[in-house]
Image (cartoon, rainbow, N blue to C red; front, top):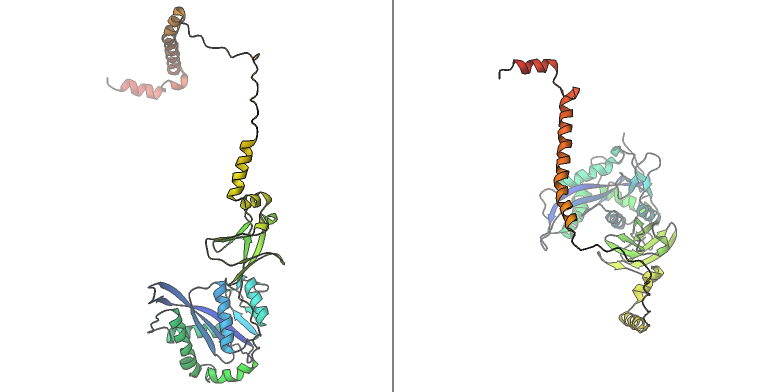
Length: 358
């Protein structure tokens, strides 16, 4: 079934695999993907080579694509990538909170395809194949910036001026008509932010990208929402903002002293002079007398160390008498085991034993 769209009605988005790139400056070898957004009516597209498929990359590619087109289509048709959809469903899919915030800021509608039905976005599927077959082969890239510069030149040249197989027109010629119908870009573009679900640790901190940020200690054990931008970290309990931090590099800690419990706050505010004063104060206190010892308490009986010839002789005889007793017990148990009915040989076994030559 062929899907027809009006001008500026919708655009389709998808990722495609791209080759590895070796950075000539650092020697790093990394895997890449190609992000493609295709306008459904004109078939004009935006393509960008990226290093991952994270939420931040997904939102940044959308912003640059809208700036490339000079406007926003009314609907974005997507598959169900994890960077956009948290739970795929035919009737009520769950959208990433960051992507929903981006759609609200730009004014477009998110339209995910039903699960296991990629034919609903066949336009961009064909666009990704066209990029992989006509642009990527026989090309060399010095780094990621060089790859994106080449692909943008290719989109405006080869891809934009070809006669499209479906429309029989050039995509750039049709885009000249469609561009004026796109939704205008907002005066202040929405800030690209990433949302994450975090849990408050026992030290009144939450962890995001290997960095710890403090929250009020009364929220220990609760799950909160963390909103991360390029500059700020904001933490929310439902719709209430409870903490704000400047975003720092990994493996560091950002702590606000008012967030700590009283004991931890007192320990954090202690300086070397305070420790010296505490030591001086403790040494100046009078020492208490030791508790008196009660002389009337009976002493435990002491062991007599005087030698007793009769006792030593008895102790010397005890091991031998005990050994004899244990030996008699073992002999009686052995005889009982041999005379027990279950231990006696059966008649057939007895006959076989008698038949065996001696």
